[in-house]
Image 1 (cartoon, rainbow over the protein chains, first blue to last red):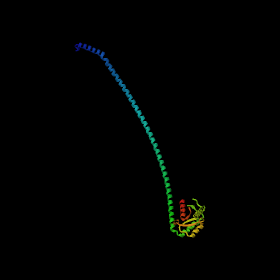
Image 2 (cartoon, chains in turn orange, brown):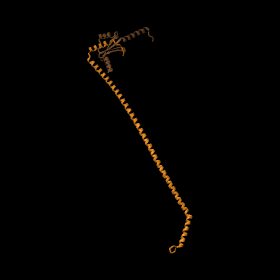
Image 3 (cartoon, one colour):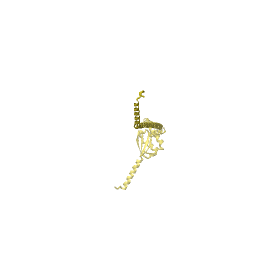
Image 4 (cartoon, rainbow over the protein chains, first blue to last red):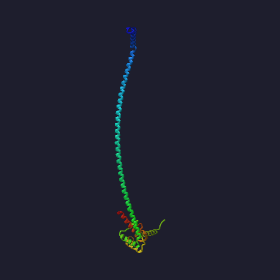
Length: 169
Length: 94
C-alpha cells in the first residue's frame, strides 16, 4: 500500500472522518435537509396545482367572456334590427300621413279655388250687370226727349194698371 | 183740466178730417213736370188715386214713368225700376 503511495494511517483517519461525518450528517443534518427538500417539493407541486387551477379558471373566464360577448352581440343585433324595423314602420307611417295631408291640402285648395272662381265669376257678372245698367241709364237719360219719356210713361202705366197696388215703403 | 164735451167732439172731427185729407193726398214723382190733363189721365187709369188730391214732384233720375206715394205706401212705375227688375232677372238667369 505504501508502494502505491497510499498512507494507510491517513486512509483510516479519513475513513473515520468520513464515518463521523456520515454519522453526524445522518443524525443531525439529513432529516431537516430532507424535510426542507420535501417541503420545497410540496410547495412547488402546490404552486403548480394552483397555476393549473388558475389556468383552468382563466380559460373558463375567457370562455364566459366569449359567450357573453356573443350573447351581447346577438342581443344588440336584435335590438338594432328591431330599431330598424321600428324606424321603417315610423317612416312608412309618417310618409302615409304626409301623403294624406298633401291630399287633404290639395282637395281643400281645389275647393277654395273653385269657390273663389265662382265668387269672382259672380262678382264679375254683378259688375257687368251694374255697368250695363249704368250705361243704359245714362244713355236713356241723354237720348230720351220729354215726348219720348211721356210715351214710355204712358206705356208703363197702361201695361201695369191692372196689376198695381200700393206697397209698404 | 176738463175739456168741454162739445169742444172735444169738434177737435175729434177736425183731426179726423185732417187724417182723411192726409190719407187722400197722393204724391206723383215723375221725370218731368206733369200737366193737369196728364194727372187726370193718370187718375182715370189708376183707380187707386181716382179720388185723391195729387201733388207732383220732379225727379229726373227716374228717366221715365212715375212713383206714386200715399202715406207710407208707394207704387213704383218708373223706367228705372223696370230697368232694375230687368237687371235682376238677367243676373239671376246668368
